[in-house]
Amino acid sequence: MELKNAVAVVTGANRGLGRHLAAQLLERGAKVYAAARRPETVDLPGAIPLQLDVTDAQSIQAAARTASDATLLVNNAGISTGTPLIAGSPDAVRGEMEVNFFGPLAVTRAFTPVIESNGGGAVLNVLSVLSWLHPAGLGSYAASKAAAWALTDAAREELAPRGITVTALHVGYMDTDMAAGVPADQKADPAEVAAQALSGIETGLPEVLADETTRYVKQQLAAAPSVA
Ligand SMILES: NC(=O)c1ccc[n+]([C@@H]2O[C@H](COP(=O)([O-])OP(=O)(O)OC[C@H]3O[C@@H](n4cnc5c(N)ncnc54)[C@H](OP(=O)(O)O)[C@@H]3O)[C@@H](O)[C@H]2O)c1
Image (cartoon, rainbow, N blue to C red; front, top):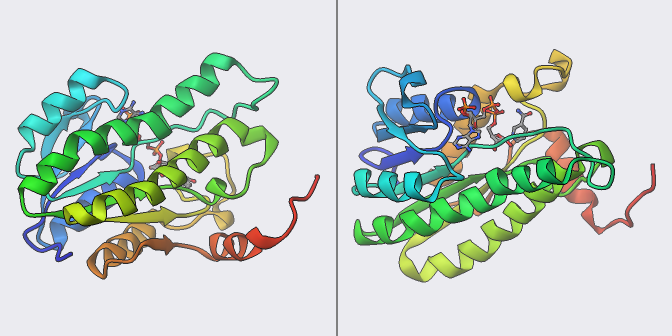
């Protein structure tokens, strides 16, 4: 998909990776709706702030009505609570699933007819190396990203006949607020990750593996699970 003259909706565009994706989409010539729970926190010159909480059905419907010229949806918004699945709070587990799985599902369902009616386009889902690697301390987040990975693959097949390509972005730690406690030398530059993701959309890749850790973990998927 050509990004010049595309019309993009980026969720969670007020900070972190979403802000980089929105900024680089503008640089590549796209019109950008920078979606955020609090649109007043969007500070990107040239972007159109758009109110969108991915857990709020009314907010999603209103955003789809406003951004009725969209041709590209970037499901970027996410949370990571550090909740283990067994000992952790059930509400935290459900909350993480709401934002990281049911959120992108609901937003994709709302924007599919919009993108289709504009002649087709693309969806980018921001996933993680933890779609495949499931450490106990991040069990809830990993389960939500594994579910979002399945969503991405199923949506790719379901949306292809409707003229919409679906790209998965898998990445390890990035230098954003979400990974603030992680040492700097273990984090990828989110600007670099955003650039890879957008090039992946432009060439119609089904999957972008943005760092060495992610490429290694994917290669190891055929091995038996290990017990720490
Ligand atoms: N950072 C990493 O190490 C890492 C690694 C792999 C994958 N990822 C994924 O990358 C994506 C971006 O994360 P990030 O690193 O940029 O994290 P971040 O800096 O914490 O930003 C998260 C973004 O998601 C938004 N958000 C949270 N809940 C939302 C909701 N209910 N509705 C709409 N927006 C919501 C936040 O908005 P507010 O400002 O309103 O809270 C914020 O804009 C996420 O999907 C994350 O899971 C991150």
